[in-house]
Amino acid sequence: MATFPPYPTHPPTGPAGGALRHAHWWQRKWVRYGALTTLLALSGLVILALVREQTGTEGFLVGLGLAILPVPLLIAAFRWLDRVEPGPWRNLLFCFAWGACAAALIAIVANSFATRWIATATADPSSADTLGATVIAPIVEESAKAAAVLLVFLFRRRDFTGIVDGVVIAGVTATGFAFTENILYLGTAFGTDQLTGDRGIASVTAATFFVRVIMSPFAHPLFTVLTGIGFGIAALSADRHHVRRVLLPLAGLLLAMGMHAVWNGSSTFGEYGFFGVYAVFMLPAFGLLTWLVIWTRQRELRTVREELPAYAVAGWLTPAEPFALGSMRARRIARQYARRHAGRPAARAVAQYEAYATSLAFLRHRGRRGRAGADFVVRERELLHELWARRDVARPALDHAARTTAPPVPVVAAPWPMYGVYGYGQQQAPYPAYNPYQT
Image (cartoon, rainbow, N blue to C red; front, side, top):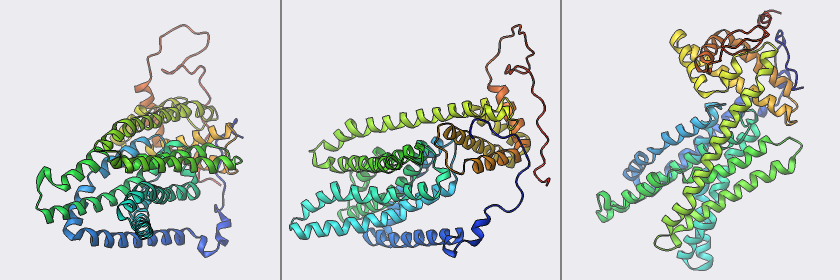
C-alpha cells in the first residue's frame, strides 16, 4: 500500500463524500461549528463578567493591557515549532479561545466551589486555600485545558499526527488560559494598589507582573505541553493499540497535574521556595522539553527527505523537491522566490504545496510502519491532487531553492550520464501529461 505510490492519473469524477448527504442534521459541519462557536462565545461573556466583577473596570483594563504582552511571543514560538507541517489557524484559534474562555470559566467556578466547600468542612480557610491551590487547581485546570487537546485529537485527527502537533495545540490552549488568569491576577493586584496607594516598582502590580509575565510566561504552557506530548505519542501509535492510545494521554495529564502542583506549592516551601522550584525544577524541565521539540522537528524534516523520493520516482515530484522540502531554509527561499516573481498568491500556493507534501511524507511513513488508518489510499490521493494542482507555481520556486541550497558536487568522471547539480543519474522520461479537468 505504502511501498508503491500511484502514478499521476485523472482524479475521480463525481461528488466526494456522498454519504454525508444523508447525515442527520446534528452531524452537519455548520451545526457543529455553530454550536461550538456559541458555547465559546457564551463562556467568554460569562468569564468577562466574572473577571470584571472581581477586578473592577479599571483593574480589568489594566490587567488586560499587561496580560496580553506575552501572548504574541508565545503564539509566534508555537507557530515556529509547527513550521514543518503547519496546522490550520482555525485549530489554534479554537484552542486559544477554549483556554481563555471555556477552560478559564470551568477553573474559576470549580476552584471557588471546591475551596469554599473545604473551608466549610474543615473550618480552616487558610488550609483550604493551600489545599485548593496545590491539589484542586492543578486537577481542575489541567483537565479543563486537556479537553481542548482531546477534542482536536478526536475530531481533527488529520491535523494531529505527532508530538509537535500535541505540543502546539496544548501550548496554545494553555496560553489562552494563562491570558485570562493573568488578567484576573493583575487586575486584582491593581485594585489592591489603589486601596493602599502603592506605586511604581514597590507596587503589588509590578511584583505580580514580574513573577507571572516576565519570569514565568511559559508556566501554564509547560504544564499542558506534557498532556500534549502524551496525545502526540498516542497519535503515532497504530489504531489497534487501544490501551496505549488511552494510557499515554492519561500519563501526560498526570505529569502535567504533578508539575502544576509543585509549582503552586512552591510558596509553602519557605521564603525562597519559589526561586528554588523555578531554578531546580522549572528551568531544567523547560530546557528538556525545548530540546525534545526541536529534535522532533529535525526528525520530521528527515522523514520528509526519506519518504518523498518514492513520489519523485512515480512522477508526482521532481527529483530535487524531496531535498528542498526537507530543508527549512530551502522552503523559505522557495516562498520568497515565488513572492518576488509572482506575488503573494504564488507564495501562499508554495506554502500550501510544502504543507501538503509534508503531510504526504508523514502519511507514507505511517503506512510503511503499519500505523496508517483505513483511509490511507483516499488521503494519499487527496494530497497528491492538491500537490498537482499547485505544481506549476511551486516547482520553479522549489527548483530554485534546491539549486541555491544544494552543496557543491565535485566533477568526476562517471560511467553513466549525469545531469544537473544533484547528480541523479540518467534523466527520467518527461512527466505524464495531466489535465485535472479532463473526464
